[in-house]
Structures are given as C-alpha cells and as structure tokens.
Length: 204
Image 1 (cartoon, helix red, strand yellow):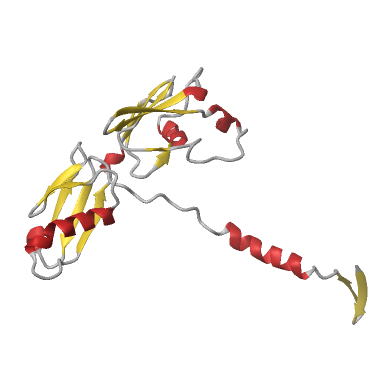
Image 2: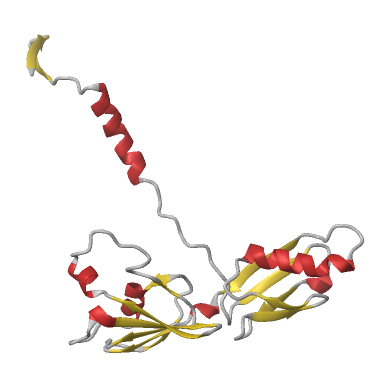
C-alpha cells in the first residue's frame, strides 16, 4: 500500500487485483443469481384440465382426470393422462382427431386448471396427521412440515412413502435424521424424493 498527497490530502492507494481475481469476483454474483430448475408438472388423478381445440367451440371443455388416470374426450374417446405432461396430452388428442379432418387438426391446448391430484397423506408420529393438497410439488421433508413436523420419539431414519403404481403399492424408504441434523452435505432426489399425488408418508 502507498500514500500520495493531492491538494494536501493523503490518499491511500490499494494494490490492483490480478486480472484473474477480478474475473472471479465479477463472476460470483452471476453464478449466485441462477435459479434452481423446477420439476415439470405431470398430471395426476383428480386434476381438472382446460382443453381447447382452436376454432371448435364444441371441443372446448373442462375435464377431471379419473382415479385410473384417464378422461374421455369427444371424437377421441378415452385419453390416458396419468403422469403425462400437458404437451403430451395435446399430442394424444391431436392424434385422436386426425381422422375427423381432411387437413391438419386445429391447434390443441391443454392447461391444468386445478392441480387437485397433488393430495397426499402424512400419518404416524407427526404433530398434525392428515391429508394435504399444497398445489405444488413438495419433497418428503416439506410434506412433514405440512403435518406440523415430527412428534417426539419419531424414527426419522425409517420414514416410508407408500406409492400406488399400476403394478401395486411401492414402499420407498427415506432417512431424514441425518438431513435434519445437518450432517448431509449433498442432498439429491434420492435422499429427499418428491411426494406425488396419492402418496402416503408414514413416520414410525
């Protein structure tokens, strides 16, 4: 560090940072500003969908996805929507309408009106067990927060998610004790899975 006099005032001159250090300093705010990617929404039983076929008022309606993951649509019949993206349902309806048009099928738009199918249950040693519908994806730790958090003597190292699948019920075991203690440095979808609609989270 050096000092110089300008008009009788002593100024402290700091050494300039190397070019590499300047680049690292400028890059840090940009890296921190990048948002985390969000999971694309997939359709669940119980969801309400708005479906529009442009220029065809008779084919514009709101449908509710049945418990088996399907819904019926005019001129198409049964449409499989379970765990599908809205864009995938648009393609399935377009394919089903091809025989009704000599030219290209008008644009089909599918949007989720009410994500009611995201409802899940939390049972066992939690403060407020019950069923919840957050309207968005949550992981298993957030699911416990909806139930008021774990109760005393809860075995957080043996939490189980019961999930319905086409081949039967599936048990997914999750260890949350290390995460809550802050002893896990890398959290992934395997250690902290998302809760799907129809899941039951059990805290023994």
